[in-house]
Image (cartoon, rainbow, N blue to C red; front, side, top):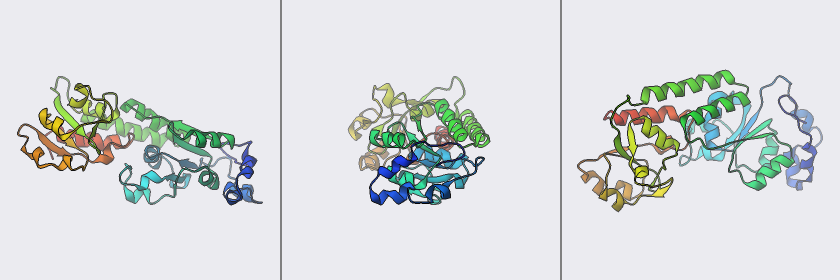
Length: 286
């Protein structure tokens, strides 16, 4: 039985799992007693999403984080520095792993597999689902929500204010002509108009040329199409062969800049670094 922030009425349903999972589920004698926590303790949390991971490590106490998603250990999909991600246990997201950790709360994205979602509900494991933020305001609201769920409203507000300050510092002055730009992401795809990346570009003073061409989220941009209609600034965030092609250096009216892919994966605290980099590029830096 859980104590503190959440209680459960279906914990014994775990005993219907196969024998190998019984110990993980805490069905062995004394498991529930050893997992009991003081009523005033901060909630202990398992995160199943890398973007939630990035916010959680900023606002929660380390001892509150029972596990991050395994994605945060993957440089190709994490916005958390490897040195930070390695400090925490990880989970592959299976129900058995979650049960073994006996969390007070699971944080997951809205695309969680229906079978996993149902299993968590059947076992009465408190779960909060967080969607994909398409604007900075939505992302800041998520920071505050996750911090509140962790019982760390003060840290959430501090992080929210840092993000708001970075947005204010990085926003181009009113009336500044937009610089046409293409953000060429890993896999040679581009961001659509209604995406966080596109909105950050707009605020920093860039016009998302791919969106203006009618290209949508994750549309493929070939090297040939890019060379036929190049932007003023090309932000290269991928490492495909085309994204390293010598022809790019021969674009006389296009400035080619590198852009760390880790700045694209998530919002939250990543917005601070993304706006700083966009501002640097907008000002003519490399």
